[in-house]
Amino acid sequence: MGSEASRLDGTLEGILSEVVEALAPLERTPCSPGERQAAEWLAERLRAVAGVEVALEDEPSWGTFPPTATGLGALGIVAAALTLRGRRTAGALVAIAGLAGLVDEVQNGPRLLRRLVRRRRSTVNLVARTGDRDGTGTLVVLAHHDAPQTGFLFDQTLQRRLHQIAPHVVERFKTPLPQWWIGVAGPLATLAGGATGRRSFVRVGLALGVLGTAVVADLWRSPTVPGANDNLSGVAALVALAELLRERRPAGLRVLLVSCGAEETLQDGVRAFLARHGDELAPGRTWFVNLETVGSPHLVLLEAEGPVWMERYAGPWLRDLLARRAEWLGVELHRGFRARASTDSVIPSRAGYPIATLVSMTDWRAPANYHLPSDVPANLDYATVADATRLVYELARALAGQAPPAAPGRGPGPALPGS
Image 1 (tube, rainbow, N blue to C red):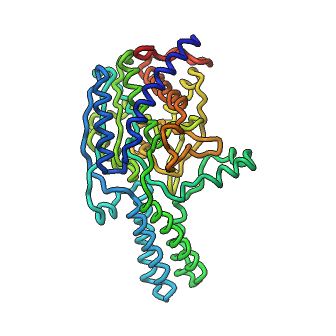
Image 2 (image 1 turned 180 degrees about the vertical axis):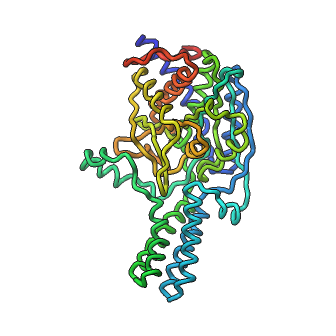
Image 3 (image 1 turned 90 degrees about the vertical axis):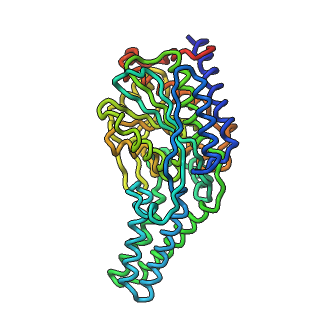
């Protein structure tokens, strides 16, 4: 069994590295020519897998979020300035408008402001169909092929240093600091100052507004990173899953491998996917897995996410099932974590679909090279990506009723072509 597992892992990692190294050199800013080129390359690669039907779908998007967030931050500064000049009513109205717009933007609201003030652009989703086409159940596996911009916000020096000094402190926390609260706190402080007449509150609101606006403006001006971990690790896993499913397709289960565009706009791509395909995804017979940044040393299963307030994912039973499959495979899977960044998972979760979100972390509780120029193929932990791939395959078998009994210990895993 040991030599078979080694051959499996070697073949799997070869497929993963092929995809990551081909796509990482492309500048995949949302809605850019590089994003589309990545989707087209991925489509051709998946069409080479027998039995996979691939479609590229053009969808609307409104571009990256920093321009909108910068404008909203500027509104917060204006609100504080008006209030300090004694124009409390005007300041309050501007603060409320800025606060509502920011929450709508970052908490995945109806996006009224984005649609009103931003130019409509185009992104592209990839949808690959495999598995049992006549199956009554559907597993949708999500990833995204666009890449994020960097900025000083993402520097991990302090977090790494804290882990070196007091690792026991860092390891106690399973929810990151709520970075978007800076933007929310500014207009709230201005409103509190205007209502109570305390200018010190308004000054705090002004300072927070300047800080928050500077942060998102820095993102706006910064380049797009290679995105090997975020999220070519997930995209590569989709290709490897297609190869696994070519050899052994779980009977009775359709599988959709979906690589979304414009995830870094805050979920334009997955919103469009559900709007287009919702009618064919039967409630109660459709399950989602999101592979989001799975190339760090430790594989993690998220339970909830929320930039402003936390939203627990639908279908906790699916996450429990995935955890049991991980135990059977001998894959270490950390649980109890929550994200302060938004992911594509929140959109199907709100629609009531059970979802399991796989991410990964370093020892200092952050994704490796997250939104940093160092997010290159050479820094990817391919063993973790391979574990995530095998784990989703085993989940598919379990949903199809074909999984072996749950028991501790590493299973041999499925066979790959040439293994």
